[in-house]
Length: 313
Length: 250
Ligand SMILES: Cc1cc2nc3c(=O)[nH]c(=O)nc-3n(C[C@H](O)[C@H](O)[C@H](O)COP(=O)(O)OP(=O)(O)OC[C@H]3O[C@@H](n4cnc5c(N)ncnc54)[C@H](O)[C@@H]3O)c2cc1C
Image 1 (cartoon, rainbow over the protein chains, first blue to last red):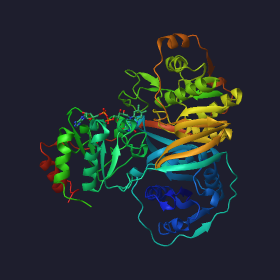
Image 2: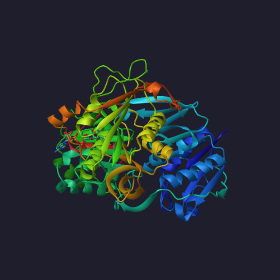
Image 3: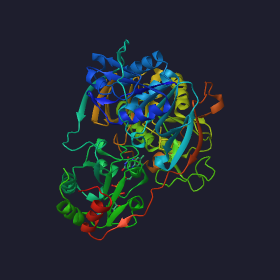
Image 4: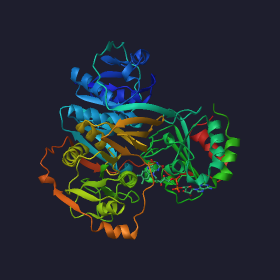
């Protein structure tokens, strides 16, 4: 079988659960090998030991502490070459979007972004904001993919323990310098990890009303997401935008409140298990996706919901 | 500062796209086209940089030779001239990036600004590929760009928040949604744009290897969600269904 190199994603050493979706994909495609890149990442590599990988490679260097496209692309490419990986895969994220096209270019590989299915050497991916699903082949000997985590189950642990190896590679300094990260602080569950997401849109009218969604989210122990209209209005930070060009989520329950359900928004949430819509316009496209809904004024409904829902935390 | 900005023609994102019955593409009648919204943002940023610091803004577009309306829109926004690589075929990102590299080699700009993705194939690849081919630094998903002393400080929209990086110039920068709000061209600008130059080069004359690396086999409609939406009159009924039927809340 061919070697598939999965690039694990972590943030300051903490693994992102989406990594396990790319492992599921890789198990379908060949022998799983995993790259963990960063600085002081032994624990991160250890956390991946029981997922059936043929080998885990650690590229652990101080100069890799912060992600930069050039440096990381050299680390991934050199490793992929040295193990003769037929495919390099990483779950979709802003890092994967930044990095994988560079890796593909270095490997002279064809690339498919955000794949949602893999059968018999063919990939499926969404186009046109999710209005169409394309089937494609990568025709080069080496292949690079980003894997849409919501489309692949998270891998369960497997038998045995994977050996961990330090992979040595020289990383020349690139022309970009990391300066700072403004993390959006929140005590809530992360959007991508949450079981329940309540999402708000333009229907909230103004920042003075956001407490309504916060109280409901508190009760449900939910993450809060937003439509683009709400993020553009400055009510929420960019990392909370759900949609084609924001985050793609598939929680157990997605509650869309005062969101019309434009195709670009649907692209980010339509694979949620249960979708609930609250909108005063019965014609809003969100109702064509929703399982449960109320055609109602959110300013009347939300306080009552918050009062009546038993605390879920 | 000399800036190349990409300007792709895409189906209007406000319009519902339909897959052709035989799966060979999308229905093209009833479709109107627009400048890729992310490219529009990139063009606006390039024009602002020019307005501040002087220079030239060159649009670069790959698309049908008889469809230049979107390029004219970019010129009306303030770009100075345009280069169009004419083809009616879909051009995948890795091929587009090779074409862009050829033009960049010929034109030697200080900066390439691009939309972070084109909202037709939604690939989000070409800018990163171009930067790698040029051996230039990349700063993708920009929400703020400051240029000073031969360096660009760029705020990037990333999953965790906003990241700032600094890149030397020349560089490739790709635009995210909140970089700016593109202007509507005024009538005088639209009139002026009619006289601006568009150099059209046929795809087969570009003189580089355009071998594809992926092969699209067909399109289909996305799976529909099963079932109708159950509508409730009262909050109690809704909560009841979420508890008893969906089993999601306790
Ligand atoms: C290139 C591009 C990329 C995009 N990417 C994204 C993306 O990633 N994510 C995204 O979300 N959008 C995206 N969009 C924008 C998208 O097209 C829509 O404009 C946006 O999703 C609309 O947000 P909204 O539903 O909050 O606002 P609107 O469409 O204005 O809807 C507001 C809704 O609130 C309802 N409402 C108002 N008042 C009340 C009330 N009192 N009670 C109950 N309901 C009420 C209204 O009936 C309406 O349905 C993108 C667009 C483009 C062009």
